[in-house]
Length: 138
Image (cartoon, rainbow, N blue to C red; front, side, top):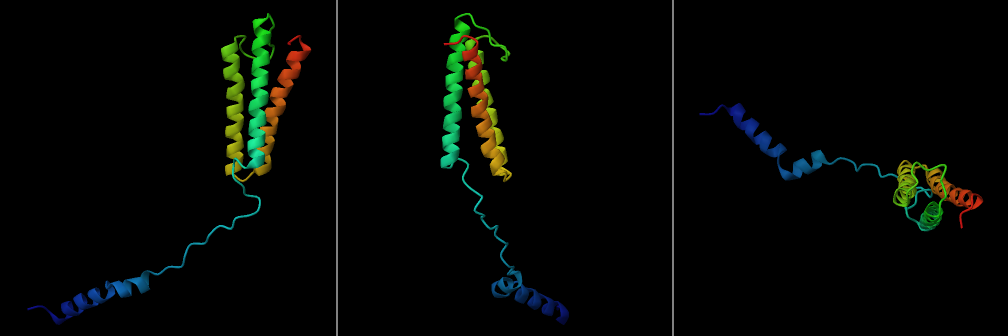
C-alpha cells in the first residue's frame, strides 16, 4: 500500500506536466528583433556591383598592359615577379583580397569603408596603368 503523500505527489506531477499547464508556464516573451536601419544594404547592391565591375575591368586592363610590357622587354619595378602568369595571379589576388576586406567591412557595419576599399582597388590598378604608360608601355 502506498502512502497518501506519494499519490498526491504523482497527481501534482501529472497536473504540472499536462500540456495546458506547460504552455502557460513556459510561455516566454519573444526575443527582441533588431531594427533594420536605412544604412544597411546588400553587399552586391547596385553601387557595389558597379564598383566591383570597375575594379575587375581596371585590373584586367592593368594585367594586360603589364603582360604586354613585360613580353616586350620592360621591367616592372613594383611587382615581385616579371612573368605574366604570376603577374596576373598577383593583380587578381589583390582584387580578391580587397573584395574580402570590403565584405569584412560590410559585415561589421562599416559601409563607408566597404565602398572606400573597392575605390582604393580601382585607384591602385589605375596608378599601375599610368606607371606603365610613363615607362614606355603601349
